[in-house]
Length: 471
Image 1 (cartoon, rainbow, N blue to C red):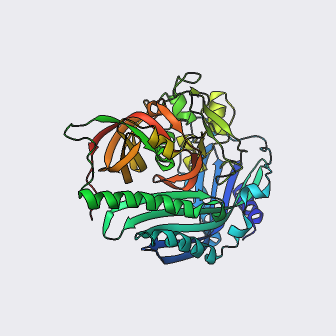
Image 2 (cartoon, helix red, strand yellow):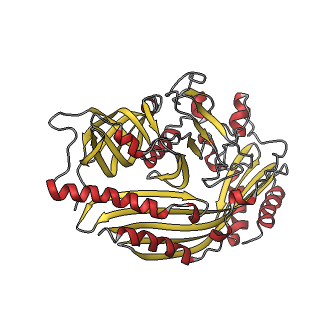
Image 3 (tube, rainbow, N blue to C red):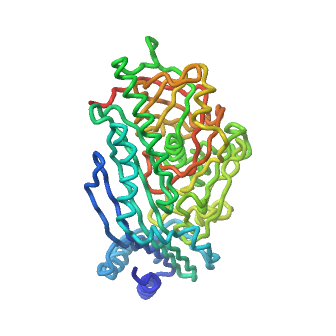
């Protein structure tokens, strides 16, 4: 890897010479290896490395941002940034910048880094593919998906002597299982962390096969999927058993698109939590926190302005506790930074928690099924989730890769896919069972895992049946 300290110091010196009163530089570099799989065969043996340099300066009462992905272009990008600055108007208030260095972070290397993953050996990826295929193909199904590994270094420096750096590994596995004769028969499992070795590959493959087998066998006997609405129009409410990927997607949109814990949205009055800190907003069995140092995730010890990160409780036993800030928001509202700054070019949007986790329990999917006497839906994942009303936390989306009707404690068979429209906080107020929290990706984000459990919620609102996948 390149000498990160030399590169960031080069930007600091270059911008200071050109008249910047404050500069911050974020330099990232890394190597990645990815294999995509179709019908059990790797068809894209992609590998490569890259760099990214993002920098932000204060010049003549203006904050200006620039970025590039080439060292050869760095000097010209700096020149262009200062040339363009003269055409920008001064901000009404002097741009805020920290006046002293942030505390230097120091974490055990084993929390961030796995030496075997850092070898970037493609044989590790092939081994995972082989292990999944051995289970999926034996059952008469096919495996699509992706497996990846990488090692990255992130370095931050600013004009007041903040210097942070960390090197971390990451790994991802996505398993999409299909019936080769009917691709509408599908199932899904995904996971991410700092090492392929932490993934229970065979267990995940067996989960996918189980769902595929339920669908295939039911369709062979009955020829069509169950319409849970029957002859009644929507909307209708059903108890739901939602896998971790479902809740990861819902929380991703609630937090990001709806800005639930964003300090800017909170003070603007547009967040679900505006005016609600200290109030009960979810069930007493729900505790949500942002944990950038969780050992099962992909830890990040500092935010994108170099401020140290730490675990922050957002909702505790159903009570709203905190929203998040960067230094600019904290300065404006008389708070302290919680270590949630975005990149300089995105900071006008506020601050976000990017490492959400839900406190887990000891229930299992099997127990949730057994305890569902009235009709309920067991849902694999959700797709195309979008916020429809920020202040109520309402979102819509569709189910994907397997929905199953459960009744009298047993799985009856696969249903048609459904569109939902529900308030996420309200759904989290009706939780009856909570499983073990696991690192999980959602269909809404494919990089940083959330640490979330499967959960059973009562009375989840569905509005219509959607068309099935084309065979």
